[in-house]
Structure formats: structure tokens, C-alpha cells
Figure (cartoon, rainbow, N blue to C red):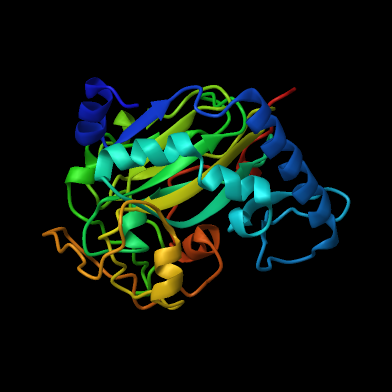
Amino acid sequence: MLTERQLATYRNDGFLVIPGVFSNSEIAELRRVTDEFVENSAKIAANDEIYDLEDTHSAAEPRVRRIKAPHAHHPAYARASRHPAVVAILEELWGSVRFDTGKLNMKSAGFGAPIEWHQDWAFYPHTNDDLAAVGIMLDDFTPENGPMLMIPGSHLGPVRDHHGPDGKFCGAVDPEATGIDFAGAVPCLGKAGAITIHHVRLVHGSATNFSGAERRFLLYQYRAADAWPLLGFKDGIETFDSLLLAGEPTLEPRLAPVPVRLPLPPAGNQGSIYENQRTTGRRFFEPAAERPVAAE
């Protein structure tokens, strides 16, 4: 499904945007289900095993910034995580595909929270780096509504320090210490139904949604069958192998000479990347509270 040009772009830049992978009917179903989850969040007052809530969440105005592991909570999300086109694309990249986990990041109009610069690799290093996240655009992604921002080619560089001033993992780099030119960041833009694929070592982030338009992004993590998590897999080999979507299981992890920095000691705030990043003491992206909301 990938052209030679797309394969070369992924190898060189570390990410792709592919339009039209999900049909209008598939996106409509995912939106409907998501609306139901947001409506039901009105009954929840604090973060739990399903919801990560905006600080301004209330019963009167339910505001969700993340649905955790959505594939475990609704069959529509589970189907999306195993979409045949997504599996086929990843199989072209690696030859085998194993599912990991997922989340639905939601930037609601006018207040959707930012995510500071980071590498996914910092959270879950493996024996090799044939890992990627696939993002499904449930809405049109524009420059104004907080799209994911990529630093092209950064997946070929070092693993950055994601520890805070207290020495604990915080899930964000210090933008002033990296030497990265963030002015060269490329936004991932597209229509609903498009997907993004980004390499696990790519430096990326996203700004606050200051627009009047929703930005809902369903993200799933995948890895090659011979990529094994360095921090272990607590649910056992049978469950690990049940996540295989293409290829054959193996008891021989492929060891690649890739840079690794363990996410230890663990973050002081657990729960999600939003909570992890609270302790950074540094901020690149402007939060919603510091700027007036754009008019509808």
C-alpha cells in the first residue's frame, strides 16, 4: 500500500500522513461512540481507569482530554485498532505486527490541552526500535486546532533526557537544552479519515487548541513481533502473543544497537502523559488559560 516515495519519506523524516484510510462511515461511528463517552463523563468527578479529564471538567460542562485504552472499552475502537489497512501498512514496514495499546486524545474547541515535546521511545524502550504510533483523525486537522507537530529526522538522533529537575521521569524534554530548532516543526494536517504514522523515536508535541473546532485523535501503538519491552510484559507470554496481528510469534527478541534511557525513577504524577508532564517546571506550549479563546 505504501509507495517507494512514502517508504523513503518515513525512513528519512520519521513520519507519514496518509489520507482516506478510514471511510466516512467508519469515522461517523467512531465520532458517535466518542460523543457517548464524553456525555457519560459528566458522572465522573476525577480521573479514573477510563477517563483523563481536563482541569476545567464539570458535570455541567464535561471536558475529556483522553480516553484511556479505548479498544478495551468499546468494539468500535477495538475494530479500529486492528483495521486491515493499518495492519497491512505496518507489515510493509516491519514484516510482522504486534499491537501494544492505545488512547484517544481529545482537544476540545478553545481549551484542548497541549502535550510538550517528547519521544514515545522514552516511555517504553524495546530491544529494537521497529515501533510506531498510528493516529486516526476523527476530525479535520488544521494549523489552528492543535495538530501533532513533528521534528523531521529526529528519530535518527539520540534518545533525549525526559527527566525533570527532581531527577524523576516527567515525559517531556527540556526544549532549551536539546539544541533542536523547533521552528522547523511540521504539522500533521489532513481530513477526517486520514492517518499518521510516526516512528517511536521521533520528537513531537502538540499545542493547545485555540480554535473553535474539535480535534479528536485516536492513537494506537504497534511494534514488530521481535521487539520486546525492556521493562517487561506483566501479563504473560500468552497475552503478549495474543496481540500479534501479522507474522509469527518468536522467543528470540532482535537486539539492535539503539540508544536507550530508562523512564526511571517513575514520574511523580502517574496516570497519563498529561499528569507526567505536570512536574517539568518548564513549558514550551501556551496553555488555554493564558490566551482568550478564538471566536466561533
